[in-house]
Image (cartoon, rainbow, N blue to C red; front, side, top):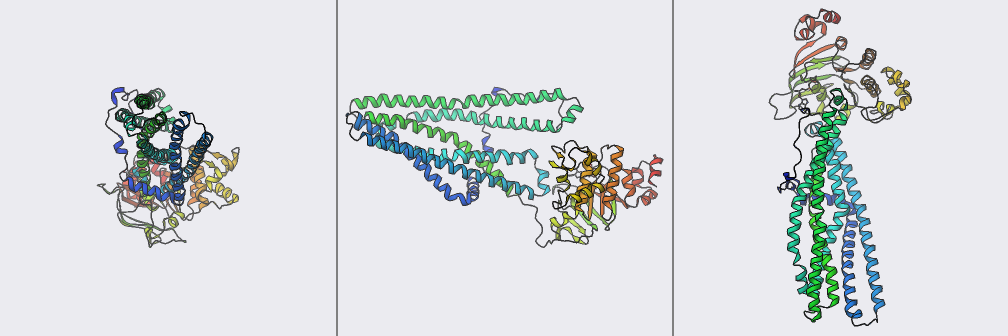
Length: 614
Ligand SMILES: Nc1ncnc2c1ncn2[C@@H]1O[C@H](COP(=O)(O)OP(=O)(O)OP(=O)(O)O)[C@@H](O)[C@H]1O
């Protein structure tokens, strides 16, 4: 959680804050063509369907142009000359036109929704699958919120555009071209008059959208900040309460919510001007066409008739609507393409990949060896996190890693799991470099028990079976008994079927660790990597954990990031680390006798502690 000055104030929104500097620039895709091509590839087997949709949209748009044209013709050829012959046929044709219009646009929309949903499903599915394959180093560099935003917002934008904007966009283009062509054909003069409003329309729309796009972007940003804050505070509730920061949290939230409110108010208010302005301009254009067209019709000039005026009145509306739609949709489409590009960017990130000559190893015994290992998390890092580290742990041995915070204990564990590649040196399991083993076969033989074990939403049984889905219920109980977890689980109302929700429900940290030890026992790995819990666990549970860990360690090579003397005492060897280097190693007896760093770490003044270790 970020630390802020209590009761400090964040800058609040000022109406004058929004400038016309366009933040959209950043949101434009770098490679629009490439991104569209990627989407096209994703649509894949639905391409024919997409072409049918485009055909339906074109038909619907043409049909919507025919309707007013026919009405105008009826006025000129039937109503004004008072000749009603053939009128019923005209009416039937108009009916057919409008019914066909409804059918084609319905079919088009229906098919488009199916294409859109499938495409978005594929996009989500592929992105999620890719998330599973990305190396741990990728997640180190990215914020959790950012990745969530790709998964949710960016894909949602693509979904919206495919669901509705695509049809609107295509139909606007066809309608615009069609209307303009018919208008020019009927009366170039009236067409020119209708178009007099276009410059006014463009200037006013530009003025409005320049402001709304900034405001919408700022609103989204503020919304993101507010949502991030909610997530942070929900997760950190216990800390908020422990430090009595409720008032500060409420004030800070209020400020963020106020920003969202202000930006939403201004963006909606200014954005809401668009339909009003368009309506006003439509009426203006109608007045011009009706006024000047009327004079021309009365004087039988320029081929203008009452029917033509009626057609123009309708077309003038049809002409400005797609223009404003296009202006509105343009940014939505561009920002969705940019969102899609960000999604494809992630999908282009290299995945965790085994070397070509890596093989599956079935019978790992569990010897672990580091040979002059040098490792940096980041290539630009000046000092390596692990510096020329060498050691060997024979199979079945247990090693306690000790050292100050930041010494590199967790890093060693992560390197054995092959989460990262080392810069130089070798890590060997049973004399085989781990980069020659598939990660799957390596990790299958490594059990991990973390300080604060992660349990998933689901039953306790499901959590114990997480790495061993084919285990029987009896095996689950047996593992739990060995892990000292059976006692507390059976006391729960639903026993093994107790559902854990959100941060492992109501289990204590100690109980969570017992469940994770049971999970590890069931997995029955050759190598164990343990990170002992640091926080205080009640003595009874602690004894249970100690016992469970001892059971777990029998017959396995174990590396324990030890925080308790008792654990260190029971390990075969102690490795003392400082700044990524092994500065002392040996049995604890030998280290104490050596009276070196480990001895001093144990607090040389505390005779009791030393005695306890002997
Ligand atoms: N993902 C990471 N990216 C960059 N640096 C990291 C990363 N993880 C750890 N480090 C750095 O590497 C060094 C060793 O960290 P590591 O977590 O291995 O120490 P540790 O001995 O396990 O400490 P602790 O006892 O506090 O858990 C630290 O300086 C830490 O800041």
